[in-house]
Image (tube, rainbow, N blue to C red):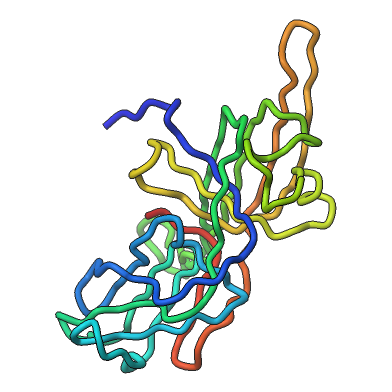
Amino acid sequence: MALAGYPALLSIGGTSTVLSNEAMTALSAGLVYQITAAAHQALDPSVSPVVQVSPDGSSWGAPTGTYTIDFTSGVVTFASSQGGTEQCRIQSGNYIPLLLVAQARKCSWAMKRDLGEATIFSSTGPKAKVPLLIDASGTLEDLTPFREDLNTIAYDGVHRWFDDLFLPGADVFLAFQPGGAGNQTGRAWVKLESLDEALDVTDVVVGTVGWQLNSRLTSVPAAATGTAHVSWR
């Protein structure tokens, strides 16, 4: 189905914020759960979340077996079923609030994967490839000069600008909803690669920000592994 471009939402991560007893929704009962509140789904990878399960919603405890936490989209995947009626929550942790980029008007997002050559001697068919590392990159175009606010409101309670994120090489969280609220969201931890600003006497000032994917190290409980790079959900 075709999507109109104008309802799209482009957001940037704010200051890490504490969450408590965060409810999760079963994507696959007993196995896969996602934080229910869309605004809290981006977990802070530097803070180890405490995952709990419950058979009845009142008595909570640690899950059995190992599991994986996708910090970009707030998804927990268990290696073995916790039970079809099991409930799941994040008892404690931090999330990254999302703030709209106020004057964004264009955005591109490209994903790719390196492929290793695995063709051997005496091969008679097509080349064989092995999937290796994934990568992503993109740009966003904004009508706000880089020394203007990122958001229509104060950003994290202080004035902060794109070059404040670019110059120190800060880790930046981006979220992109091509169809607007309620549609699938692309999320990624990135580094800003370039800042370009164009001025024309016959047009408005336009800024373009280039970014590249940058995987984050994660802090997780002993029974868990974590990922914090890119996701589409």
